[in-house]
Image (tube, rainbow, N blue to C red; front, side, top):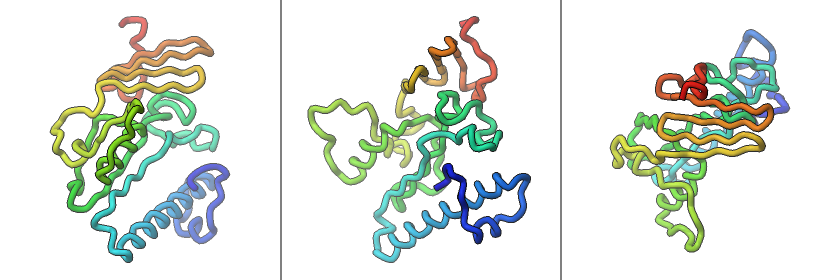
Length: 201
């Protein structure tokens, strides 16, 4: 429920203590509530004896929105929810699977939500549907370390309304219809998208 409308329980609001603004404090209280909810799910899995054989995936569908009045919500990245700058699309993904995914393992290469279905199918030992094009890939070999330092994708695409993006390795090209604009970034050296290389490249 870390989403508009920003409405938090008083106990959570009180627990986080004073912050620079009431809005920031409410947002923090919502994160406390989310954390508690995830904890309840994990506890239920333990009580049912399923925790050791459960793959838990935690992620977000987009970056924080600009309209809630927290200007640094996606810092240091540029952009917001509904934009395809990194602040709108770069989100963390956490995966926990005791005995299968090493604790503390980090993978820097980007993946996409389209990868969840083939990954969960592989974890469950289920076959992918026949006769359907599957754009995502199973990322378990990357999460477990069996894939080494390879990337799950060389190229990822996004499209939303008048925004189109292709990321190939660390190069990201964004085309915007209204107003017409072209952006090109080398995310390896400029992850916060400050230097538009479209004219030069």
